[in-house]
Image (cartoon, rainbow, N blue to C red; front, side, top):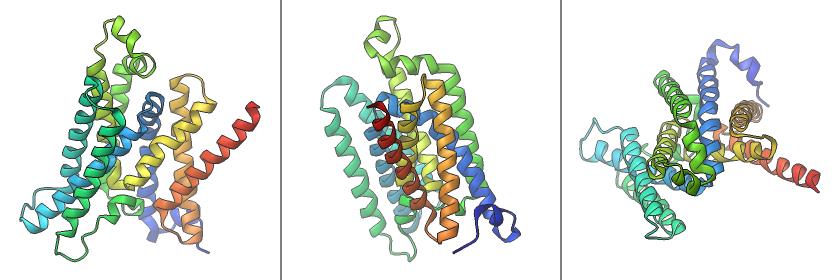
Length: 282
């Protein structure tokens, strides 16, 4: 059994844990806000497809850097380009209704995963793996990552303040929004791009799988407890922070991998809330 989080935070040898905790708490703000829109609009699968398509960009960037000599091609840039591209592609197809929504989401999802794995397998340099991008490692967050998450959080807050009413309108009733003269395609694509950027920057910190978990599970719980989107966002942010802290605590005590531990804590809380609230509603 290892020591607890509070004890480790006071140890000078574990200074990286303080950075990890700050990154986790800042990420909670992004998850709480963007996740609320994602769950309310019911575009969880779109967020998942964007996250996995980003893997294709990461794989190509790693291949280009190590095999083609494109040393300036950062994996984060590859992830950003593929995520934004997939968000715009899915959004355009959904808005045009030229193809079933679930079909294009599935196609983008599997294509991104396949390309990412193929490109990484082509890299002959030892130690290059896609696994770290799937689960991330919050314990190895750098100061640069912390600044990126901080800037993202500020950007998400600014967009929410400026366009919250528009996002609410397209989340609940697109037809009414169109009748009121709102440019639904513009704000729908903006919401998808905001989701894509959030996924990309947080993937490097906590991994693709954990991004999806924290983007959807806390807001899903909050939707059963809170009334109104602002309250739901606050509740989701608090739950995200709680799950991250609890996951880090359990990970330290049981000596487990922190990313999957946080996912399991979130999933356990979701199923517990589902059963308790469902029983209460009866």
